[in-house]
Length: 487
Image (cartoon, rainbow, N blue to C red):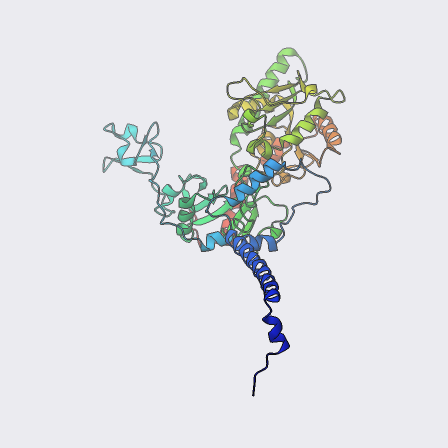
């Protein structure tokens, strides 16, 4: 029986049709290969989880809060996200192989008036007189020894680890170290050794995140910042001292959180300075025979070395929401309000170049170079209120410092962290330019009528004692099994 080719077989064997079919197959192969390539790239960057989980918003926003990114800024942000081979996602942290970590040498100890590699080396032949600070003189052994108990509750490598940039030590009221390390900022993707150190010691030392930088633990929209997926820092620490309005929308259930941040602590210096300032003011009033003294400025805005060389375009200016600050200055300098203000760190260190401010502010706004903290406090004390326009700020220390200096705050309601400090006794919120005038009028009227009590709020709720007790309770309640707390 002869085998007769079927019509289908004949069609398949036609050269012209075979070429057409081959091109169709090639097209579909390319399409499938393209999809596979995209999948691999997204998986490598850890973006698949990031895309599947929408980023929660901490508040509903009806109007734009800042100017949109320019094309150049968008390109820079994309470049920041794609460059480098470091840790940028939870997937990277879980799967990328890290080198063996190198532990830095322990920093020198304080001998009182000088430093030495160890307490035993402090005296340098001078005996007990040169054995102070972190050390104590043992008369029986005639040696300078480490102060008893100071490091007894920590891992042997704790002292060396807290010398690493983002790692911050924890102490009790007696300056005894606790076996907890706070991670106060995102690790740069290429800080490979720091990542390796964290991975090695995370089961032996309790690492906790603490809000202190941009939107950390979330990635910042700042085009000048290194970016990462939002599942990274919200997951890798068992607990977080944070400032989110709705932490349950940010952190997984197994991560313990508490409404605390770095700005809640270390407020003794501004408190003392405010009392000393008022004491001097009383003497001036008595000498002049007046009930009150006029403040030199109406408002103060504190930058952070404001990218002056680029006319306030850069990381710091974006973080401080400079674009909105300029619009607000136009209002504050207008004939309607005619206010005088101070913009700190908007001039270069040589005091020769300044960032451009609205022309109507000429003669009404003082621009300064980057200043030491004590001088910043002086300007706050000489002003009626502190102006805070920023949004992507997790822990604005200047806010609690201003409150401790007994000055109210005019704050952007959309700020990530710091919102908890504003109430009827401490200042006013504004949402955007639409209600800025009303909020500005409110803070001026309430300040004039002495309705605010910001310093009292700080003494009642913040500072090392109050915040420290809240921190201790958080640790005992959630990690008491992991940390030996000094008595």
